[in-house]
Image (cartoon, rainbow, N blue to C red; front, side, top):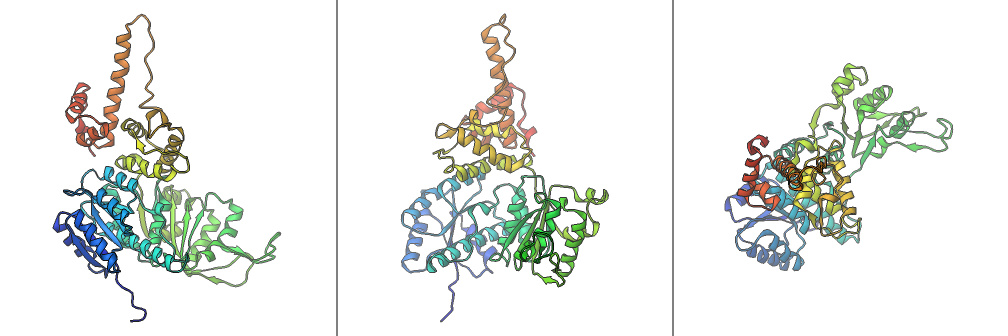
Length: 471
């Protein structure tokens, strides 16, 4: 039939049959063809057979831990056979470690078990869009639809990210205004872009305006534009960013820094979907979805008279609050490896990862600049690294790896001074490691590369209770 589009195909690979049933229950209404198998070698055979029948799988949900053939081995075999499905690795054990491995070997995405309805739906949807966009690009000689960027995925494995996906899944399909709150560097623009990518507007413009970066006299012109002759040096008509975002999404970052006079004009645009360019007598109508972000407490700004109350109510329809990095340190290894892979080529380094001590040193820091600061420090460490792994000395943080020696009292024995330095390091290392893993001794010992009994003994030596680090 002319114009008939075959449904997308999904393969679920897991040695637990109930998981395939769960995926079918979650995605059953999405018009996907879903098949399942319970072993890695069977997944390879089914994938190859599907390609031969010209009905390849678009997405493969692949369990990391399976008997006989691990998910990593399945991925390598699929790549060698030229099978171009988008692979999403799944794991319920050590999700951060598995996600790091998934990134390293080139998986499209990662999801932790137990599966969350919203997160699974949105990650599969993103993978399908990337697959279909790539196929269209191949058919049209490079003129396909816009593909989701690899960096547009929200990195994290904790419960907070599942809750975030739940809220994104509720609001993304709508045109409701979203307000994102969080400290600088927590990823507010990434969340805004994710909402846009998962909306019906995803092929239309996503326009970013940083209200704090544009001088106040120029901000109105940036947003609304002007007509020729509206003011000195206005030699031609200028389209503003509202017009540029028509049919798409306008992201107003740091809206708390917007001048009061301009807040009134923004409020009118939101109420009428119309605006006037500077010097123009007629109105221009736009169809936009607005997402705002700020690191300020807007309620206090309203009380102080710095932000209009009516505008606050207008934009705060669906708030999202992003936690600072210090409150989700479980995600730090995953984020650090993500940035390592992102910047490795630019730094011209063949670095594979971090030593446990280097990760522990990162985990000892509070990161006031949040994820953005972590990215900068990883980039710095890549430049400094001399071997295959980033060492503590490469990480630009005063802490573990640079513990100060005691005052060198030469009347004391060398052995006594050395013991003080070693004990200070051991105590701080165990505390930071347990903090990084929320008191999970098994996970902490794996990262440290030591037997769990030895880590228990070290904690007991310094009267450190792992339970005290559990959140």
